[in-house]
Structure formats: C-alpha cells, structure tokens
Length: 358
Image (cartoon, rainbow, N blue to C red; front, side, top):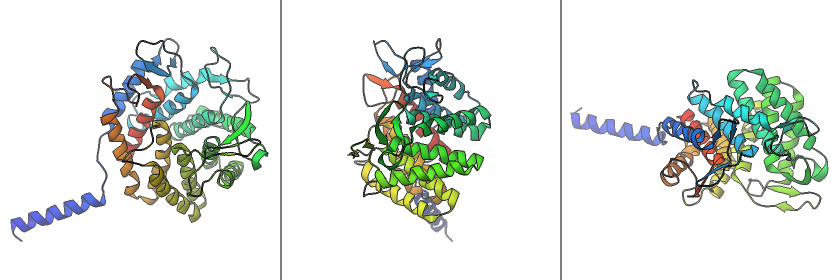
C-alpha cells in the first residue's frame, strides 16, 4: 500500500472513530476549580460558617435559604469525585447543620438558619440533602450521612396522606399542594435507601410514590406537570426540567433493581420527549440547577444504555454557558448585576458530572 493510500485509510478510521464517539473530550477540572474558588470567595461567610444567597455588588448580603445549599452539597460531592484530596463537603455540612430543627413533628431542616428565623420545612429541600448524603455515604461509608438520610426519610413520610389519592405535600406546614418536586426526589431517597439496606419498606414507598405521580401528574407527552392543588385537584401544568430529571432517574433505578424492561423503555422515551420539549434553539431553559437535576437522569440512563447521543446537548450547554454567561469575575448566571449561589453550585455539579463521564 502506498504512503498516500495508507494516510487516507488512517484518516478514514480516525473519522469513523470520531463519529462513533461524537462527544467532546474536555477537561472540565479548571472550570470546576474556578467556580468553586469563586463560591468560597464571594459566597462563603467563614465567620459564621454559612453561605450567602446572592452576590450583588454594593448591596448587603444575606445568608442563604436552605435550597441553594441543597445544590451546593451535591456539587461538593461531585467535585470530590473529581478532586478527592480537596475537602469540599465539610464546610457545606457545617452550614446545613445550622438549619436543623426539632420544631417539626420529626427532626428536619428548615428553610432558614434557625438562629436567625423560624421558618417552614420544605419536604423537597430535605430530600435533596438526603440524596446528596446518600451519595456521600456510598463513597465514604461514614454512617452519619446514612443516619441523616434515614432521618429525612422519616420526616418526609409525615407529608404523606390520602388527599388526592396519596403523594407527598411540598411543605410541612402547608397542605395545599402536592408536587412532582417533592415526590420525585422522595422516590429517589427511598430507592437509594432500599439499595443500601435491602429493607422492603423503602421499595414499597418508592413504588407507591412512583405510581401516584404517574397517575396524577404525568402529562400526555410523558413529562410531568408541576403540582396538584388540594383540595380542588386543579393541576398546575407548568413543566420543569428537574421534575423530568427525578422521574427519569427513578425509572432507571427501578430498572436496575427489578430488571423490568418497562422502566428502561419509559426512561428512554422520557429522555427523548424531554430533549424535544426543553432543548430549543440549542439551549435549555434558564434555571441551571433544574437542568443539573435533569442531567442526573440522563447520565443514569447513559450508564445503562451507553447511548452517547444522550449527552451531546449537555456538552453543548455546558460550554455555551461558560462562553456566554460568565462575567469578568468568573461568576456564572444570566443576570449581569446579580449572581446566585445556586447557579454556581449547579454548574459545578454539571461540569463535575461531565468530567466523570469523560
């Protein structure tokens, strides 16, 4: 074979290999390091071991609600997967501990710092923490994280009753709405606890919540409405990426546990519907953290079916945000004047998860 022919053959196989593995081979570690450095610089109150909600130039900062810390503790776990020598987790746990309350019927975490304000406890906020703590437990095997997740499971079940046929409320002190965002992550908490303990009560809870969400809040296209009002049973038909994310991930976990292919088929159908519905004009809707939760579901599915096409939009989105929505200080977000902790945390999670896939 001539050198020219040999060269052309090599080019052909390189091209075939590139097309069959059509995803960027990108090192996102500098992105992770940059964003996390900014979190510590602009959002961390070291004196109080707390975090600020937002960074607004020239304005007094207030301590974060619990919700952004739900994003930050998951981001800390994912960053630890990539950089295990860095202690990302403990400062966030120290902050979350300051939201712990016994004012609810069972211990939980309320929405505001306890020493600053008495506040309601959101079931979904608690569930997001449990999900992250279970992930930490699965890596580090420190029992305190599993114990906290079990505590949260017990608390979340105080939000279950027969109104609207079952399901979990959104807030502890507000019995007017049951949401996909409090039932989807509830399914994940229960499934992950089942995987660790093999206690059948957790699997039964997961299936009970899963069946209720599908019966009452699934839309005809296979995605999910936001909530059902109590007692009117009126449906709020808004659709958000994070609700798709939890239910997508739930289907894959149920497939892994039961080996029933219907769950995998539902997951694949849901991922296709979500891409079609949410990914418009080469971008996702604007809430980074909602999207990060949906990415969890896509990666869970990718780990089973190994379909690289699932991840193309995520690489595009991650790079678009870094290119187009970063200010001169390296802070991410749409608002030019105001940057939020939850946006920074969400993108740490996104970049870390994509790095782990790479």
